[in-house]
Amino acid sequence: MTLYQFEGCPYCRMVRQKLSDMELTYVSVCVSPDRSRRQKVVEVSGRPTVPVLVDGDVVLADEDEIVAYLAKAYGGAQRA
Image (cartoon, rainbow, N blue to C red; front, side, top):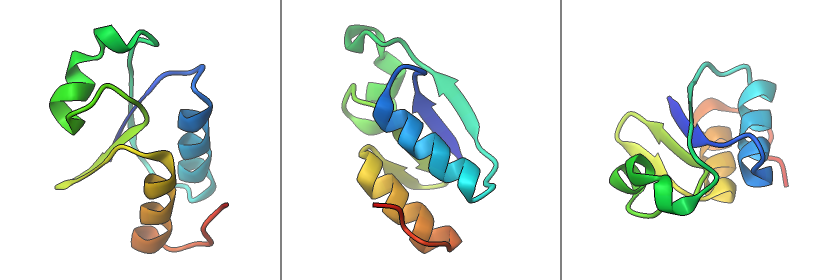
């Protein structure tokens, strides 16, 4: 699993917390806070926003969708 994110992003923090709570291993790719400098994120998800989670063939680019996916795919209660 790979998470594209940056430290100051509250939505990214929410996903990192969920991953931590579930004790899931992932690779964190820190991207620029500047959307215009996120070419790799656009290549992966089609848009410059973060967080983006890649899990095999699954690519999710919305924090709520990511949290729901993690709960469904890996178990555990979904956080609101």
